[in-house]
Image (cartoon, rainbow, N blue to C red):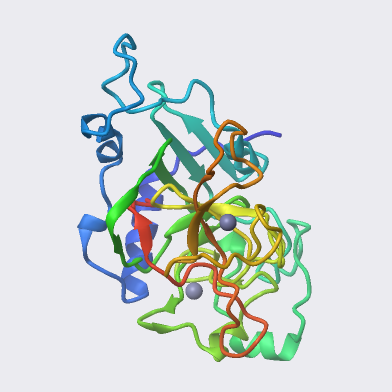
Length: 294
Ligand SMILES: [Zn+2]
Ligand SMILES: [Zn+2]
């Protein structure tokens, strides 16, 4: 399928700044770490992956020679492009912020063919956010290490995009403005726990078009760790060994068979939110080092 060509960087940057300002977001530029800072793990003392003969040994431990297969799940969406860096140390994921699935937030004229009626049209009309998906022009770019590592301490998520789903739309945390996502806000969501505003369509809850009480890959968080549905591939059940960020180390459907322990990954929260059939997508902190979703 033809990929969209991303030429609109200045627009996007402006849109992002607007988004952060509009949701009462942070002024903390330090959240937007330069992507290059994620490639310096070769300086770590635990530099076990190098053979000493590899000319790229200084760039990172265990560089990839081809794009890891898990990123093909993103590239399956016409709205996402994931590319491995020439040194094999990082992957850059670019997405246009639009989902490749149905929503009541597509224009009801249905030129996209993806508009669906809301479950409760009257309630949705009252509670929906302004703007259709078509109204927003975005480019989200995230560069992560091929082999992300857990940080010494966790870090709080900012408002705005904190990850990119396989669909092409960004993942937000459990806040709306400066408050928790409320029932009134949820009543304005589409069937995928998402709405528009301030500058993009985004998910707060389990996106049912991607995962519904299963172990499907949902997306990648800005610290480079992947997020899956409520269930884990390793047990086909809800994991019982999760940390405060709904993360754990374990085998997934994408784990290299040579890797017996699996790798760290997150899950959509399996805890009912507000006593409803609502599951927050990422209410916790980052356990790795966040990179900017710019
Ligand atoms: Zn929101
Ligand atoms: Zn798991």
